[in-house]
Length: 437
Image 1 (cartoon, one colour):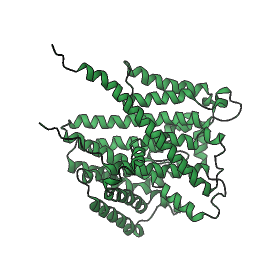
Image 2 (image 1 turned 45 degrees about the horizontal axis):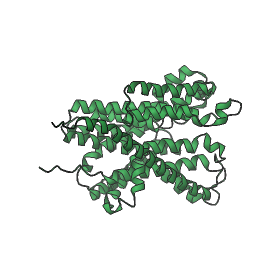
Image 3 (image 1 turned 135 degrees about the vertical axis):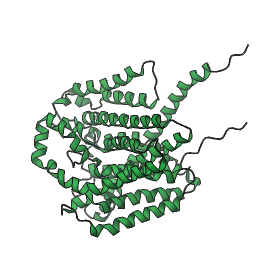
């Protein structure tokens, strides 16, 4: 009896995640390392790079919804219980939300604590406890390391992060409340839980109606919600938040719904609609690729965005408000995300080897995101004099160097995961071998 081979990975899925990593690296370096006046003479290049970099966050969030739905489709084909699948999907969202908060603590301690006069830990620069603690927590959850008492390892990792937090004196810093800031991982985590509740384990037509309908509702409600909550982003209110930890804590639900920097880097309205749209697209992307159909849907969505723009009046006339909240601009970015999916499906499998580095970045996008963010905004960049100190032409080479570094990091992380899983599987395989007499 022959055994069917395991289903082949969707190469376009890894490639599109990898592109999101590239866009992210480019945008972050441009934001953190470009010197004042460094774009002089290169304004058009700066505008193009900024526009392309702006596709990173929509791509990550869209791919999160798409990947979650594709994973559930695979589990459904294996006969998985709907309630069990839904609970597991919500659990993954909760886990990612916990990782988001741990990462904010790690970023705060390792990236922002470089001021003079704070003692030897700051002079040394490398926060070993934070790195080890965060790594232990992440590795245990991924299943790469499985000690006899994994709960102790998880809580031990968190304890190391917190010990480092206090050891470095970071609790005295005025900006500690930055830990509660809503960022892209927070949006993805909450979006995964919402999408799981709406679609995982439900009949396909019901799931599509719920995720697609929720996405449209979010898109068109956002302008009104933004106008309603805009006062919370005013300087006087931000000053109150920075002076009162309890107010910052109580403001968190509103910051999740809608908030601008420095209250939130991202918000659920309207960013979560990218994730819900990705989940809605998933049924079309199972099985055989349909690139022309996907490209047609992308073109239709783009056309809808252009058609409705003259007829939708924004409650605030500020052009920045339009860029953040307008349904037409949302549809444009969503069309680009879906269009990339269709375009990448057109690439032949012969591109697998040449684009293996991009696939690696895509498979390990979370690790690449976390490491690159620290290298870009963290204390090491400040020590090396890169913080807002590089002109645009030279910045292009630093972007390439960062991409190469993240490919190396992703390969090393992937190699370690495979090695540990093989090591853990070996005793199980040996114990299950039949005994002959």
